[in-house]
Image (cartoon, rainbow, N blue to C red; front, side, top):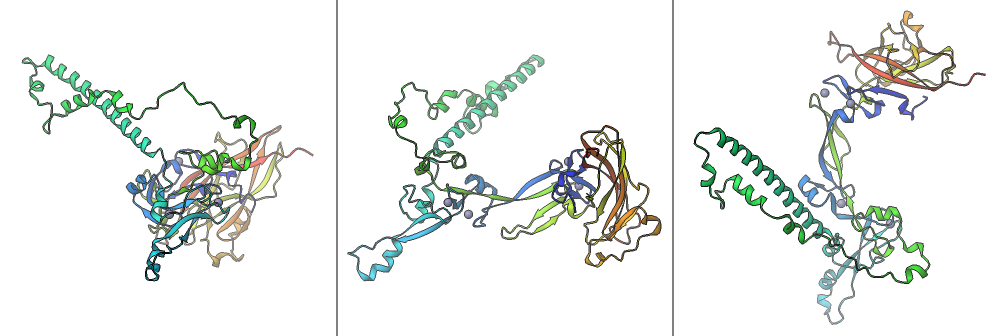
Length: 448
Ligand SMILES: [Zn+2]
Ligand SMILES: [Zn+2]
Ligand SMILES: [Zn+2]
Ligand SMILES: [Zn+2]
């Protein structure tokens, strides 16, 4: 089939009027409409490490900055680092009876990359106990960042309190002017302790100066800078000792400039997300909870539910002529029949040329099943003239695009697919739904 990998040629219109290829859309069976990423609600179901497949709850994952505690990536080539164990030489004074226990105690570990052979020994880290090793690659500025976050949290709390006090004062002054006896309620309230009113608590909070909060963590500007070494100007640069831009950007906190400063990077957690229709709140995609299972409980992809329109190769577009072409429509559903009508939508402003299709003829598509793949499908004689072929679940329709004289640019035609799903044989009155599609037929070939 032509344009199998060029999915942007045939675009389907979502309910929000934006256009996407069919493979990027969901089909909500309950609203009977196509849904794009903006028209769906995304929820993270499970946080898990793609390496060790350990799943984490959302608060725990946030606490670990969305990183796995046990898995590390190579800072040089981004492959996963393997844990290697070495047994330190046993103490010569130790007796033979204690040898086995002491060798277990003396087991030290280091991380090594199986791809580029980078190891933590190269970066100057000594072999350590397992827990020590895992904790030794933490960000040195983490404590400072934590302090800053706490300071800014207090500042935002203070700002909110100020606003609250201002609003309360405004309200009480209004009340006082309206009441004939005035308002003495506020002055009687205790200002400290458990029984303090929210207003007095806010007042106390608002009176905390900002400078106190930030003084400890603020960076201070200085004019005294140490002069650079002469080596910077005289020594030739050894590019093998300098990190690449990609290596620096992968470790945003440290941004190492020298190869010796590289350190293992904690593996980023992945999520399994479920997708809901924003309108009816039904699930459109729900993965299995188990991290080792790649299957889905629900998967309403448009590509598996909705008829697909494709362009057949072998047509020639010429200016000032009606160009015949074949559009195929296929039913991806393996269980249910469906019927459709392909009507031209020549008034659509997205189209640049007009199209002619067998617009008043309803065609039926069989389920996509092995049994229907033989070519023995009989077409009704009055419909056969409109068809290029009929493969049961997929039929080719003769259409023609009329290109005006002196036309330049892309030939885009618009159609409306009148789709009638037939869920069951007992479904007496299936409803027809209209889906606008725009098809990019390419550019006009130059006249010969
Ligand atoms: Zn949308
Ligand atoms: Zn892991
Ligand atoms: Zn590596
Ligand atoms: Zn829906």
